[in-house]
Amino acid sequence: MKKIVLLLLPLLLLLGSCHLSQPGNDLVEIDSLLVAQNNDEAYKKLLRIDSNDLSKDEEAYYNLLITIAEYQLYIPVKSDSVISRCITAFQANGDKEKLTRAYYYRGCITAESLNDIIGGLQNLKQAESIANSIGYKTMSLQIAALLCHFNYSSENYDIAKRYAWNVVNKAEKLDAKRWIGFGYQMLDVIYNKLGEKDSSDFYCLKSEKYIDYQNENEKYAYYRNIANAYLSINNLEKAEKYYMLSLEKKEDIETYGALADWYAAQGEDEKAEENWQKSLHGKNAYFRSINLKKYSDWLKKKGRYTEALKYASEVIAINDSLVGSEKESYEARVVQEKYDQEKQSSKYNKKLVKVLVIVAFIVLVCVIAFIMLIRSHLRIADIEARLQENERKRHEQMALIDKLKSEGKEQSVQAKVLMRELDILNADYNDALNKGEQCYNYVKEKGNTASWRKADFIYFLEYYKRLRPDFTPNSGESYASLTHIQRFLLCLQDMGMNDSDICEILGMTKGALRTARSRIRSRLE
Image (cartoon, rainbow, N blue to C red; front, side, top):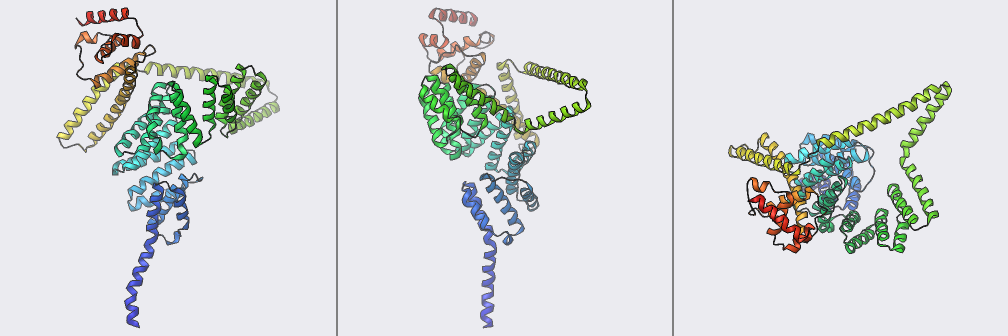
């Protein structure tokens, strides 16, 4: 009997060790579920795990996963203490991949749940640094996407644009189609904020083929943005199609408002009325206010003044409510100040407050005007010179990098700094080429350039130079003396356009075209 017990003891110990490792295996399986966005199933399995059975490292892993699950399920988080303990544990055990994820999700919680954008950005930059140092490409892409979003939300549009291109480039290398679509959609909204509507529409439409790879709860916004882009280029059939697809995914008042606006412009009053009504009943007060204002204006045009006045009054009420707690705090302060002033029976103080408010307002206006003036003076007016400077710097950077590689210093700090600078230069240049490609495709369809700005011709010429590097009608000072329109005309001829096409594109008569050619010849001789 004793021998049997001795023989069974190793087996029992082995089974016991397997049992102890089971929670670790469960955590890996749950992690896979979270990566696959099976958040509900992952969260249920996490809740079934007894944390008392976990080792110290497994407990840190468990806390990381529970944080990720709650974040992805939109469960409110009131503190970052749990994820901070994870960071301490991963720093101690040297697991840099988990440490990267922990910093990433602490950044999410800090910015979104605790309303500390600066703290959130600091955590994300820490995650970015670690991810790049260990070659954690998928996480690096995800971090770039969130940094793009945060900078956009903070109105740092130039930095957001750089991160949007970073997302597109990283996603293309990984063939991560969902993130490629995200990058193009971010470029859409960034350029829209910058007032560059053509670029906004261009990148929005580039995101169209990536819709199927987006999360289901995000598709409605993609559809709506694409509908808006098609509407701006007057493709009414596709615009209506995507508005309807957006509403199928989610009955969103912003979409109803856009659709109502469109139907009103088409003179389809019945459909406009139906969609206006639907656009007024959502929870988002900001968009309700916008829709009410548009609906009120539309009713006024239709001569329905009583209804227009009613909805205009609702706009005022909603706008008052949007001030929220800030307004309540301000009103409480005013009441207290008034009480103190009345108690002191001093009219002088009241007048002084009014004067100070007026002076402060005037000073504020002057400061804003001064800042706008400085920004205006600092803006580079000559785009062509900027492109030439970009090309010069890129050649210099590449020459320095090649030199370091030949010396076996490609991993040096200097080489990495040069590579980062070159990435920024390439992103700016690619932006110019994308605009040029947009102009080129427009011209191929015989589009009229009467509304083009000087910048559009410069971008077209830069793109055409890359497209047809062998196209050199002349060189030296004679070609350089040509205007952008004259160089553009030579490109149209090189594209095989006949006189009728060129006249249509440039919006000129055949007589004016003959004159233009004569002037080009005289300059090139």
